[in-house]
Length: 173
Length: 173
Image: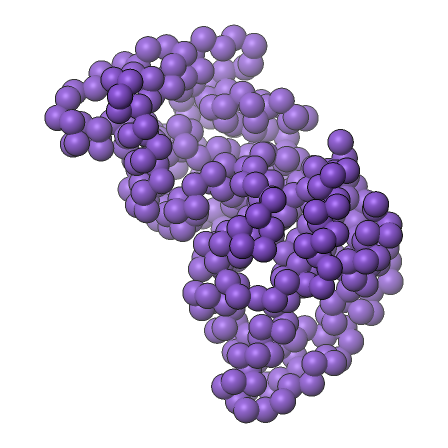
């Protein structure tokens, strides 16, 4: 059975929407959800509050109540019938994210058992497919990388791209 | 630079000693530290309290104050000069272990940054060497497996064995 590794933030969990929600709550400023293509979300807010992104992301609870990316639950259930599906998240950067991410997965993806979850830094993994929004994770990856579209990666052209979960279904099912 | 992946429990963290300490505290029974070769620690206590192991291991804090395995800090510091060293622990089995293990590593192995820590279930990793006490982690591993001696694996003969951290230094440095 072939193995698929799937990233969390911006692939199955909507981290940008969560940030925008907190930013709007604190600054009462509508932040345009159409971020400038090729930029990180925190580059789209005034420079003097740039570090809000890092402040929010380090808070306990930030990763606990994110919205699930559209169609990801349905498509991953289908993928599990044909592939060995792993969730591989660079959670280790944020200590407080570990339990939040664990609980979030248990709530939204209960069919993914603990053996198929990996929280890491560098993704030194062996898999046939890696679905990720960060190209740095593709550099040492030997399998087929699928770049999941996110505002920050819109200008990248050298990888096979998937814009949403239906496109993943079309390619892999 | 070659990559070494190192397991935590029974390789750098003394989980068995922690269990025995809790068991002795609760039952006031000296448990022989010479466990029967080839057996899991929980098979060395009366059958009716077998599940103490699982009770303890699921408690918050169980993984936070384990003793560091002899010489592991010194040898890992040396290994880091020659290898890309990762800690790879099957922590995902125990939700409450995640933050404990993260904090334990920060305390005892501060030179191992977040990019080099991986908490997982199945170890679908790409590395040149894997030091582990569980042979199940060697089955799909493509590199050189080193079986770190622990009471439960004493009867296993089909893997290259290391009995302590000095032997690892002798082999890899």
